[in-house]
Structures are given as structure tokens and as C-alpha cells.
Image 1: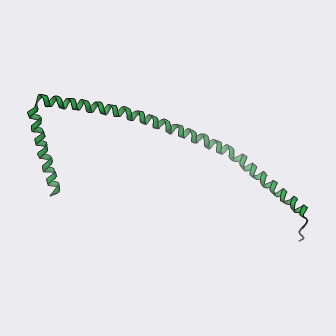
Image 2 (image 1 turned 30 degrees about the vertical axis):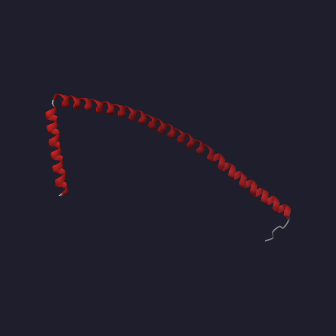
Image 3 (image 1 turned 90 degrees about the horizontal axis):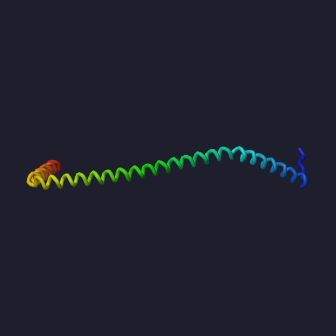
Length: 110
């Protein structure tokens, strides 16, 4: 086998190979663009849906928080009303509850 040592022929051969590689790279790039574009669109849609869900959750949390605050205020008002109507009964219930809690804590400790 004889190899050519002519620099002009070697340069032409290298240019042909480089041109071939460039063509292959261009084809791969052209094939990849639609896939990348489709992935990008899906990623944007997913981010939009997640942002919408987060916004909805935050609004839901605010509504539930307001409902719990209102329920706590109603309960507090009801307890104050009971204390005003029957102070001795409420005091007796508080003392009895204290004894029961104390007894439960002692039985767990021992």
C-alpha cells in the first residue's frame, strides 16, 4: 500500500472528511430541534400548571385560615357566655379536669 505524502492531497482529504462531519452534525442538529422544541413546550406547560395549582392552594389556605379564625372566635364567645351564666359549674369542671389530667400523668410516670 502506497500512501500519498502530497500535502495538497492530504489537505483535500481532511477538508472532505471535515465537510462530511459537518453534514452529519447539521443533520443531527436538524433532527434534534423538533424534539427539543416539543420538550420545551411541555416543560412550560407543566410549570404553568404547577404555578396555577400553587396559586389555588394558597387561596384555599387563606380561606381555610379565615374559617378557622372565625370558628375560634365563635368558640371563645360561647365559652365566655357559659362562664358568665354558670361560673360555679365551669370552675368545678376546670378543677375536675385538672384532677383527671394530674392522675393520668402520674399513672404514666409510674
